[in-house]
Image (cartoon, rainbow, N blue to C red; front, side):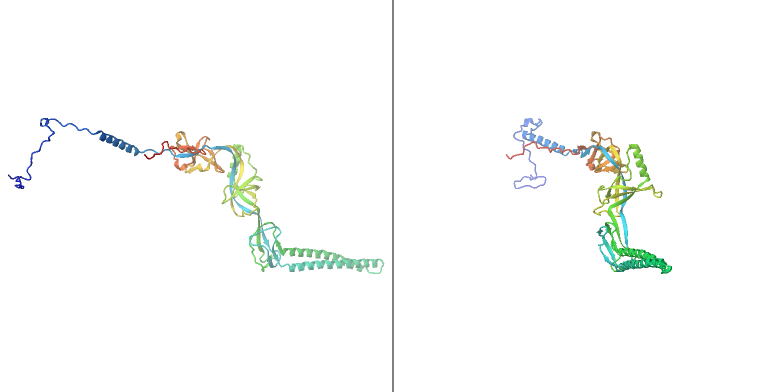
Length: 429
């Protein structure tokens, strides 16, 4: 027989003919209608399945989001102490004395005995103008004194002789009058010669120009060899006295009234302007390292500017402070008791003014507006806004936000020790 395809193999059987299925030997034909029993899993497979489920649950817990702990910030309570109240100014320094060295006599400049910009002592010779003409004038005046003295002696002798001859009626009266006149003229000549000698001595002294006080001298304005005098090249140099040195500043009317009101409200005794201490700092200095005293206050306010001119004097032994410098000054005006101060670094500023970040109930941060006062070292006076028991954030401000929770740590407290491992290290089996 051939199959559907009509193709047979060598045995004569159709290659695509289907053979009947053989029944398994272990299945009885009489249980054909019964449903098959469920197969049981081995215990080892069940344990592996449970372990896999546990591992899956653990991985799921590990990947779950855990919120971070609150950030740590350093807090400190305000300091309460008595502070000196200051009023601050800006001003400029000025030399105690400034003198232009002038040529008062005419002559050629012979010597310059200083270096430009040097510090000179009082009485030190700075310039020398040729002295010979003035020395000659002095010698001539002195000789004139001697001449007049000789004439006076001769006139006195002749006067006495003429008087004796007139008494004996041996000489005319006109001789007495003549010699009396010559005697008086010689006396006047002596006075005139002495005056000329004194003037010549003064002019000779003007040929040597010395420092009127100790100070710093400018550069020379005229070189050696030039003709100088009252009408030509008269200004030779300038010398300034800068030890001590002055600092001028002004107090406006509004500030003056504020200080007066502060005295009435706080019962603070204001210092008198004169002789009160003043502190000064240069533009590149921290604080007010220079200590001086106020030595002058003007008689009244300038009606054009509405300010009161004040002056303080400071020692300047090293000549480090120069005239014309911009300076900061402050003067104490009284003492305030029980003032609150915080670290100046804790202050923040926004459009509303100054504020502090304070840790409130529940360790929640809040922004506290404050009114600040003057700086006291590294601390800042807080005039309004604090009671004194607040926990002010002084470090970690960048991690704190108003309304957020933080973990406050007291300033100066030792950090908590790191936790130690509780298990033993694993060892090889």
